[in-house]
Image (cartoon, rainbow, N blue to C red):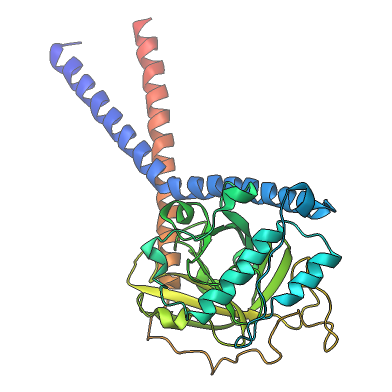
Length: 353
C-alpha cells in the first residue's frame, strides 16, 4: 500500500469518527428532554411518596400537638370577613390533627392576604420566596402536598413559594396567594414551567376536568371552569374572588416563550363527596358540600376574560414529531457507522493475516 492510500484511509477514518461523534451528540441532544422527564418523574414520585408517608404518620398520632410541644393558637373570628377560624378551635379539640400550628398559620395567612387585597402579588416568574418557615415543623423541603391532573396524567409535588429552586423541581404556590387548604375567600395560584414533565401540555386540559390537591390534612377536588391567557403583569386576574374557594393554574404561553401567561381557573367541586382535610366536620345544610365552600360557585361569565391568543398545540406536536424523527434518523446512521466500523475492522485484520 503506497503512502497516498494510507493517508487517504487515515483521513477517511478521521472524517468518519468526527461524523460519528456529531451523530452521538445530536442523538443525546434529541433524547435528553425525554431522559430528563423520566428522571424528574422518578424524583417527584420519590418526593410524593415521602410526603404521603409523613402525612400518614402524623395523622395517625393521637396526641401530636402535645408530643411535639405545640399549642394551637388560632385567631378570633373577624366580623368583616366571611372566613371563620373559630370553628377550627372546636375541631382541634375533638380531633388531633397533623401540624396544628401550621394549619392555623395557613388559615390566618389566607385571611390576612384577603383583607390586604394581595397588594404585594407579583408575576409567578418573578421567583419570589415563601412567607413560611417549614423547618420549624421539621419540613425541610417546602413540600406542602402534591397536585394531580388526570387530563395530563400528571402528578407533581407542591412547593410553597415560586422561588427559582422550587420552580425547577415541581409545581409551586405563588407567594401572596392562598395556601392550599381550601375555604371561602381563597384562590391558591399554582405555577409551573411550560416544559415536559411540568405544565408543558396544559392546553390538553378542558373545562370540566378535575384537579386534585393533596395536603397534610387530606384531599380536595376542584374542577376547571374557565381558561384564558393574560399579560404577565395583569395579576389582578389571578387574585382571590370574594366568596369563592378556588385553585388557579398558571404557566407561560406560547409554548417555549415567556410573553404571556396561560391561566386555568378551577372551583371547588361541590358535587364531590370528598371532605376538606382531616379537621373538618360535616355541614348540616349539605353533607356532600365541602365545609367552608361557597353555596353558589362563581360562573364562567363572572370570571374575567383574557387576551386573544393562538394555541400552541400544533407547535408542540410539530416539535415532538421532529424530535422523534431526528432520534430515529440519528439512530439509524449510528447503526450504519457501527456496522461500517466493525466490518472495516474485520477486513483490515483479515488482510493483515
